[in-house]
Length: 68
Image (cartoon, rainbow, N blue to C red; front, side):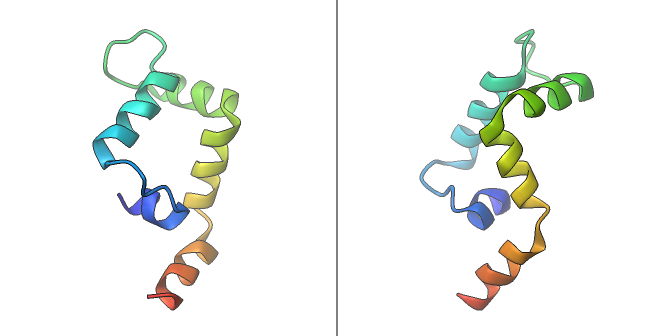
């Protein structure tokens, strides 16, 4: 939920958001992500890469704090 709020992705629930991520990068559909699946999935998905990158960019956190 925090990642969604920081990046403005609040139009879906945390569960829907997690399911979307798993659909994109859980290539063997076992309901678990290995480190290899995660890295490969993020590298192949430009939107997901941007989301992860923004999550580690603390300037977005500062903006959220400043805007209440």
